[in-house]
Image (cartoon, rainbow, N blue to C red; front, top):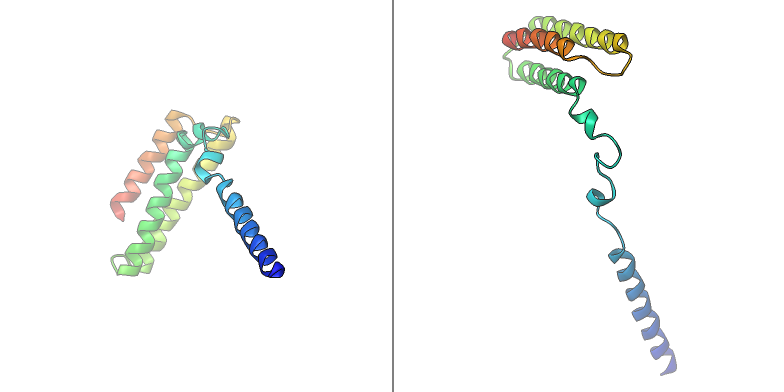
Length: 120
């Protein structure tokens, strides 16, 4: 009878410690945020906006090829234009020295991306 009581105590104690362990975990959103780590400004930057648009167009080209809306030759032409935008973006990025592109540079890149979007 003593052994059953001891097993019961161990099981209750084990379940209690596991429950406490789960209760002490923090949700990811409260332990890490872009604002607290200094990344909030990077998500609102000029270069981030250009990269979002560039990635969206790359996804669109892939989808259009998959759906048959673009031929491989057309897709290759669009990819070359998108690649040139990325090269230009990197050149602007290095010229500035602040790991950012200026508003004028962003506008230039957006104009090229707008022209490219029309051909997709």
